[in-house]
Image 1 (cartoon, rainbow, N blue to C red):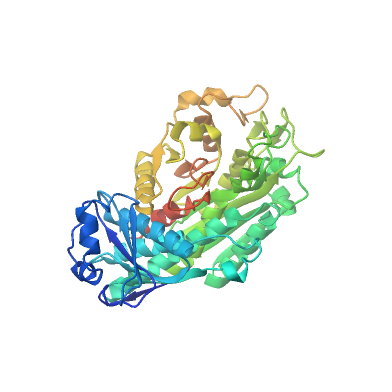
Image 2 (spheres, one colour):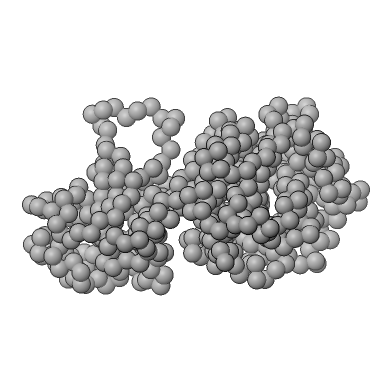
Length: 490
């Protein structure tokens, strides 16, 4: 991971391969007059001639300086409504371009910075240079560029600024782990691998962990979870991590993540085109594990439990069939209408399992429905809850993390769509209000506590380049989970 530090220095004097200067819309020379002198007026001329306007994501690369920084990259932040968010985005873009250039290191300058802004820049820099090269052959030495390994933020070094830096590195570690797990192919990132990763996190930070395999799930009568797992020879895993940051009597925040390491759709098989993206069906689980990686470093004074339900959904001679009826651990019977509505079957037993922790609140995150993508596109996650205050808390956490979300209804009028003729409930209500009926189904198993559901199907990964990050996993919902937990610190 990128090594980020703080230094007190003038931007014109730093001897670096690349100096990043983040500027707002319609920039001036305030704070960078020395750079203009060093470039013999190139900066001011670029402003005057409108070669650089400071628009969001705009960049201007200056090179050939006789001393000080060898290159300068001006990065536009646009009209700033949220400075932290603007700095984070600019830092992500800057680090991505620095990584492409092969400079090996960079120095960041953006005038005076608060500890929270240093944190945001650090998160952005780490996100921008993230990649997953593990399975690629090495680039020939003659074509090899230096990877971005070091970044320095120009700021006054104080206890507060160092705290902001440390927090940013912790969050960046969590994001990087979540993205790596999501990017791994399904034959490598298996339920066993997720369990192993969770075990390593628990050992590294002294957390509690419980892992249930097929036999233990059978003993818990988790027929809903096991119905999905019965089509695969891989051992399913229910993983529960426990972070204890305050007194034992304090009720925990419980985070639940869907961990379908690959989803073929089962007997209701998906179309072949685009099925390779179904390795991302475990992004909810990746978000939980990434959050716990960050919590181990942040050490917030909150108790947190993370639950992951991991398996694969495969067609086979032992797979569940449309029309089957199974029974969840809370005793409710479920008619299987569509075997591709499997994530909610796994989450049903995970949500029932959450009750034993006497939670203060439970939030689940899942790449659950294509219907949510149709409703909200790839910009916002859907949020469902009967508790308006909890919805507001999640939306605020998502905003702080740069992971927008939007509320969708969870009204009793939709319940008729999941009524079954032969069981207590059916696992699919058809095409109308598909994201809503999936949430209504989950509500049947989120009993005895305050609960919210996040549908991240449109935001957890991207099939196209997003300018600041490449196509692939975005890290959602890691940031939202982290900010939600931090918001619960008394």
